[in-house]
Length: 307
Image (cartoon, rainbow, N blue to C red; front, side, top):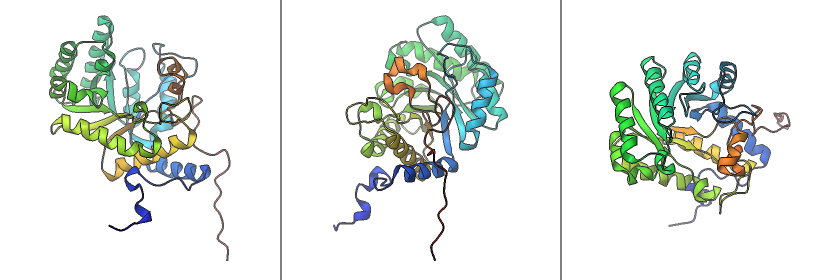
């Protein structure tokens, strides 16, 4: 086999090492304009915290900003105003992956499930997600989660029902995998300390592990992303440039291999610092003030060709 410089590390995605920051930003702008399959929707404004009541004005404003760039949105809860999100999203012509947040409080869990079923029966849900990383956190037992999944499937038989967790949980919990209509896998090379240069290969392996566990069922990547600031984790380094490179590689792979991916996340949210460390607040494509993070402050200049 002979050497070909065009195929050095070709499986890691496009080679962006020779691009300036401005060049990366221009590529990001092009890829974003081409659109993506899905975005995880961040509804909380600066100064708000999880559990605060969301209002229609802020939801409508943020959905209007992201509408030109995505076909789907993903929500995480059906209470505290989150139940408004899929209704407004449908007004904007977006498809919805709607999640019921399940934790340790029975009354809240029951309200989440009740509202998810109601939203689905009223035509606001395209995919229903019963819980998010419940097994990872240990908030419920496997049998408790299965009761919720099966009750939702019975109530909305014509809508795909799944459960969201880290990709490896579906091999660890085959009963949950069997109960789901669709496998909703979170794939974060960052959180496993993978450097950005090899992150696309790493994510492909995560996806394939979920695909193997799924045993023929459709697998959707419900979360993946890269933070733009923070201390980092082993070889995974947050930075403006690394976040752009990961976004570009992820979106191009999604299109090339027809993989449904929900990118995490739409907006930076400061409240996440406490739960995820300093990187928690910096996963958005837009910043906490709803401004694009990866556009240069300099104007986009089209150079004239010299004669």
